[in-house]
Image (cartoon, rainbow, N blue to C red; front, side, top):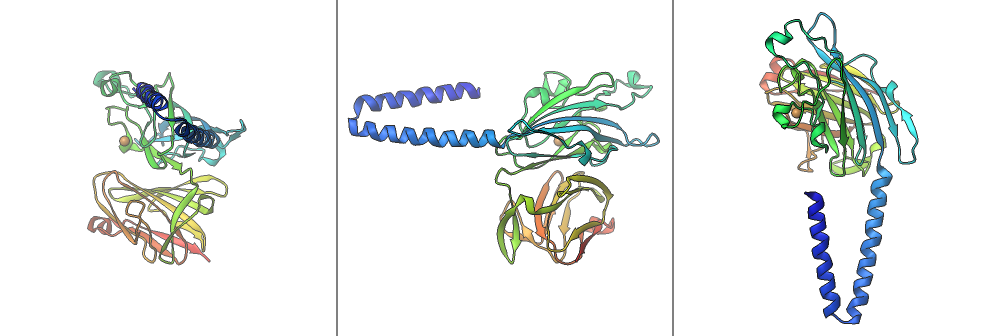
Length: 348
Ligand SMILES: [Cu+2]
């Protein structure tokens, strides 16, 4: 489709240029050469830029029961290697929690990167599975980035192609393309277990962060929105906003270490550093997020805000420079009733 369109487009562009060459005089011809030359040079730099930014990620993940006595399921990382544009491979497996966690591991890519992710299932098949015709596959379905139909992570009766999950005896490999334009914070989750809805409600969900190629993050500095380098972000807090609690993971960007911080976690930061919040709502409730004493740029309206309404499946990503201690909270009636609040501790 895309290829046909490109072929048609260049064919019509060629014919326009040919007509011009026939009908216009020599001085226009030299002008045309100059413009074409500029276009070739510009597109060379554009392509070179694309190639330069690309890392290849090779990831092995698994899904298993978190604890034998509970029904929770969780994703874990077995291996994550990144090969950069110079062919240099780095093993970053040690950044992840050794145990499976909820939310699942946060996969961090750059805009322009690709990832190949092999998922293994360690979820035991219940004795009655054959009776009730449950799907015991587990999968990865991701939002925001590009992929082919084989990497959708859904069942055949949804994608009309094939079941795209891992079984106890057989892994499944997905390919994600964090193409230009896909920068953002995205959720991934199971779309196979039991029904096509998957076992997200049992804990099979996690986060993909695609950092922008610009390598900058907007921040409020004295009432002005200023872009600071991505490398200045000391910590990333991933907070899932479920119906009655925040559930999170913290990433220390100096080491890359990811730590599960669980329910309504206390957050810690050093004063005067930049930190980034990634709020992702699940469930069906509406929330009113506040961090009293702080304000930040709204990525959508590009205005400075100090609270944000977050509905089901919405996300909100923002960065601040740390100052005073505070608490993050859901100030909606339900949020208050359920005490959706956690401390934000800033060490001087
Ligand atoms: Cu989804």
